[in-house]
Amino acid sequence: MLDNKAEIALSILSNNQATLFGGSMQNTMNLLAEAEKVKDLSAWADEIGLSKRVLYTSKYREHLSPAVAGALAEKLGLDPKEWIVIAALESERESACKSRMVRKFITGAAIAGTLMGAAAPATAAVAETQAKDASLYIMFNRQNRRLHAP
Image 1 (cartoon, rainbow, N blue to C red):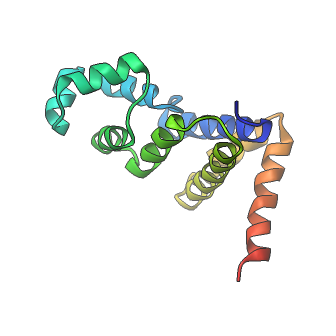
Image 2: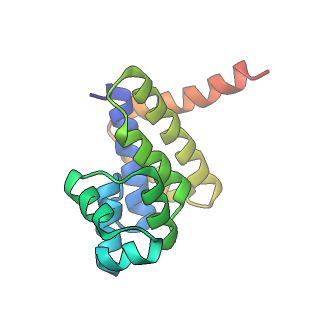
């Protein structure tokens, strides 16, 4: 299980993605569901050069590989790098290292969202969160990086 700060950070990312993409897209099954709204799995398999069994098995197992998640995201006009990371983190066993990487990824996504002009939705999602510790933690983490940078 993720630690409390990582869970809060993941929740914030989900809120930000819901604001930016018009819906919650916090895991690869949500990405696959969005893809299925556009085409069926057989058509997606043909388009990205996979056997049909790969996507049907992924849906059954409720997990996409990082490569498949990146390819689908790219075809849907989403950031493939973000989805590759999400798929990779989903496949990791629960550990302190995974929690730390989730927090680091969330912080980077929040910063990138702000730089890409999504400052108002990202700020609103953080400000509306009752877990103020998470936003303070992210800000502290950003400060810490500057203080310890060579």
